[in-house]
Amino acid sequence: MTFSIVARCRETGMFGVAVASSSPAVAARCAHVRAGVGAVASQNVTDPALGTRALDLMALGASAPEAVAVIRRAPHAEYRQILAVDAAGESAVHSGPNALGIWAEARGADVACGGNLLARAEVPEAMVAGFAAATGPLGDRLLAAMRAGLAAGGEAGPIHSAGMMLAREVAWPVADLRVDWTEGDPLAELAALWSRYAPQLDDYVTRARDPRAAPSYGVPGDE
Image (tube, rainbow, N blue to C red; front, side, top):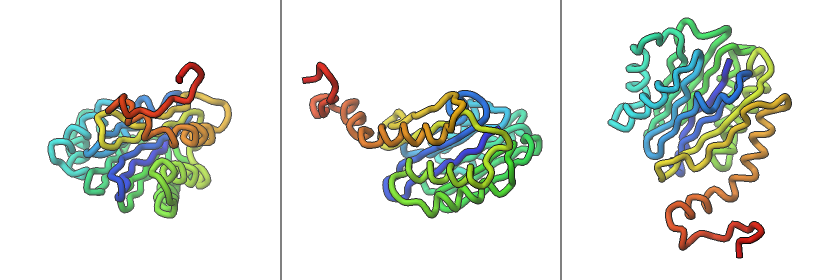
């Protein structure tokens, strides 16, 4: 009941995950990123620990295909769907035979997409194409891919949650944006959050690394 994308920006080295689902708070379970290492989506009867495990393996030098090969041997792997991209831009996907409903996967340069309980098997291919055709910051390209997936049919039922997580340079996600539940359009709401947050992303990193260089918050009381 999820469709997602994991990707690397070749120019900046940033990693990102974007995901949407009919279930609540999908990004809290499925999105995993680590600066300098990679991005992973763990979905379909989700075990979030598999996302952490895949990143740990890549941090130790495994490629995305090698990390996913290890996950493929984990208990209950037949129920899991794992997408990974590594620091070299290699990608890999594991979709267990017990993945729910119509499930599919697709990969391209620096990107992997996949989903389950899809309306159509062509959704991941449309997402890869949408990512490749998009320009701008990685967050913009992830959202373009998600919109392309939704336009191709998306999930079989209506989606209610969405999220995007980005990593670059520092040990924490530089963006972790979530729409945990809405009766409206979670991708539109996520895009609105990103439009508000993206211009401030670098400032928040600066505030964490060196408060002396931090720009004003521009809020009442901050003089």
